[in-house]
Structures are given as structure tokens and as C-alpha cells.
Amino acid sequence: MTPFLAEILGTALLILLGNGTVANVVLGKTKGHDSGWIVISVGWGLAVFVGVFAVAAISGAHINPAVTLGLAVAGKFSWSLVPSYMVAQFIGAAIGAFLVWLHYRPHFAATEDADNILAVFCTAPAIRETGSNLISEILGTFVLVFGVLLLAAPEIGLGALDALPVALLVLVIGIALGGTTGYAINPARDLAPRLIHALLPIPGKRDSDWSYSWIPVVGPVLGALIAAGLFLLIGATALSDYYVRPLMGNEFRRPRPIRNIGASGCRCSWEFLSATLATTLSERTFLWRCLTSLKRGIQGQNLDLLYRALPLPTDCRSF
Image (cartoon, rainbow, N blue to C red; front, side, top):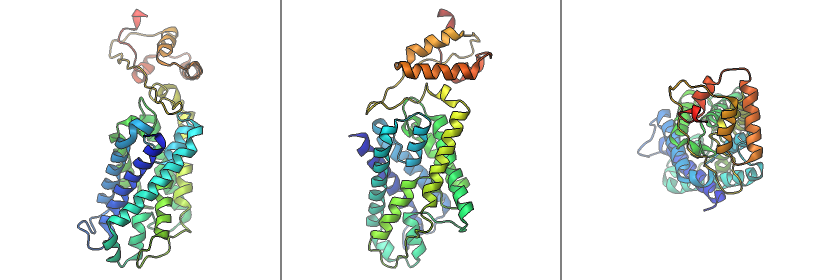
């Protein structure tokens, strides 16, 4: 399977299970009818887990254009792959939304509230106030993308996090920040299903609320840009380049595992650090950028703090 198809599959699973949870809660005559916001938040968190786990080894499991954009701006993902990833995510989201409708079709017919029908496909604000709604989407996406950038480990994207930490991150975003707009935090998750809502022959449906549709797109884009900008500003790239590997073509490159230094208390010279990085990183240009960032970030300071962040051999005196 190619990364393009993997992103379609991962995003389709995300929407099928996430929007499927919403359908189970808000549509008429379902077993889970009116079970509340906590169920929706948990459902979306688990949907992220499944989507990421399913395709992490193939595409990195971005399954969100905001994540793809944030990784690219932060220098963790090739810009040449951004368009194809985003197209795949929108296609996957549309497929997932269609499958939700297919699964719950009798319950759509049994639902009289047109707003609830729309809610299965896309988000809407609890209080319609453009500025506040936009801030909500920016803030929620910022937390998601910044968390991904800080937590990401050996392989690029959400898959590097073993799925569970990202799922928990989405869960807490939903519980803490999702009550205002429904926390789209993903342009594909909102826009593609909204289009499917407009196209499907659903009895009793309302318009697709296109006047609001730009907020769940622009907000996540801005949130991702701010997260990536802050990530670069604080110099996080200097440390995380050990953990997040750039995607070269369709091949992921995993760094060799290195043991933690533990509590040995030994100190390390700049020459030792350079040698350690040189054995870990194969691309010379990537090595130069990493070393430059590191030297600028720790110049004139003891390297003990760096020990706690970088996995170094247990006995640095052997170098």
C-alpha cells in the first residue's frame, strides 16, 4: 500500500468511527441516543487511535491536513508530499462520511431535528460568534499540532507516537476545548463530510451551513502554523531531530536505538556530542543543521540538561 492510499484509509477510519459516534448519540432511535458529550469525545479519541494505528507504518498517519502542514513548516516533512497527503485526507474523509450515512440511513429518516442531522457530518458553534469561534479552532489545533511536534518519536507523523498518546491528546482537547465549536481541528474532517451532507439525499435535512464552513478550515490552518512557528522559535527542532525523521520519497528512516545515559553523572564534550550525532544521522546536510541548532541553543552552558533530553550511551568516557 502506498502512503497516498494509507492516508485515505486512515482518514476514512477516523471519520467512520468519529462521526459514527456522533450519529449514535444525536440521531433518533439509536441505542446510544442522547448519551452525551463525553461519549462523543471518547469516541473521537478512540477513532484517532484506530486511524493512526492502522496506517502509521505506511504513511506516518497524519490523517489531518493541519498536522501535515505543521510538520512541513517545522521541517519534519517534505513539502513535495504535502499536496498528495492533503488530497488523500479529503478523499478519505468523504468516504468515511458516506459510510456513516450508509450505516445509519434508517436513523437519519427517523430524526426530525435537521441540526442533528448536520451535526453527524460537520461541526457548528454552540454560540455563533465569528471571532470567538475562530479562536476556539485555532487554540484546539495549536494544542494538537504542538503536542504532536513535541511528542513525535522515531518516525515522522502521528504514527511515531504509538497512537495512544495522540488519542489521549485528542480526547482531552474534546473534553476541555471542544464544547464551543465541536473541535473540528482538522479541515478534512469538517469540509469533506459537509460536502457529502450537501450531496446526499437525506430526508428533512437543512442547508450545509456554508457561511460557517470556512472557520473549521482557516482556524486549524492558523493553529498549525502558530504551533510550528513556536516549535521552531523555542529551538525544539534541535532536540527532536533525534526523534522525528524526514520522509525521503516513500521510505521512512529509523535512527539506531541509543540507550539513556541514566544517573551516571558523567559529562560530555562538544566533540563527543558531534561524534554521537554523526553516527546517528546519515544525511550530511541534516547533520549540519542539527549540530548548528544544538550549538546555538546550548552555547556556553553545561550539557547536563541536554542529557535528559537526548538518549546517549551510558559511558561517554569511552569516546
